Length: 93
Image: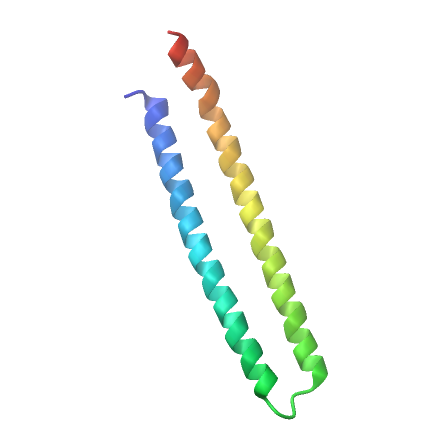
């Protein structure tokens, strides 16, 4: 096994692990959002501004979550690009 193949396997493992963990945490965040929204909906006497603030906070969290995901995916693509030239050079030999 070539060292680049081993390194690529490690990166692939890290990518799968990250995606799995990220998706699980995103689902947890979505469920928490739903539970909290239901709670706030049923709370009497809660000012409209509080609900709006919560809605804005949820939107900011989702936007941040997607920005993090896009950045990590971009970085994984960059790392995977490091192995592509090495692999084609190794295949030519």
